[in-house]
Length: 172
Image 1 (cartoon, rainbow, N blue to C red):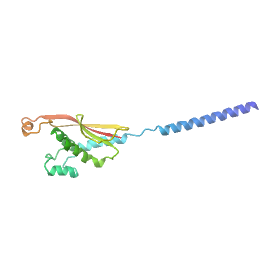
Image 2: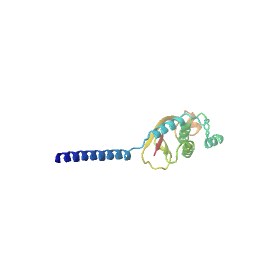
Image 3: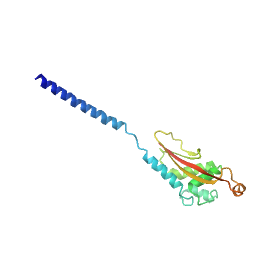
Image 4: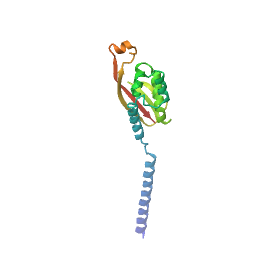
């Protein structure tokens, strides 16, 4: 009789221990789940691809259209990235910043950090703190050298810059 009680209590404690261990494993896996950054990776790649392929004459943006109408943008076949790079090369950082802001603002949520860098020089940067992930996509662009803005320096002979690395960073 004593042996049956010992077996019963031993089996009972093993089953109870198994249940407690299973609950601990299940709860720890629920709380330690890491959020997925795949959407940021896709968004970063899509942004650099779109901005590097769409021409300024094709974009439906009131700010870009105003720059075209007032003669600030002269080459309508520039892609958006090339135009940002041209503004950067002409030391018109404010125009480059506003272009990056106005073109990308409709596509990004207010909780997503965003920035554009050319050769590690900040062109535009949202003031949102990095909490989890920082994803970067880069593309090479080229054109006329930074600081060579007169016709004389551009045409006799033209001083080309590049390739410059333009980088789009997204973070949460």
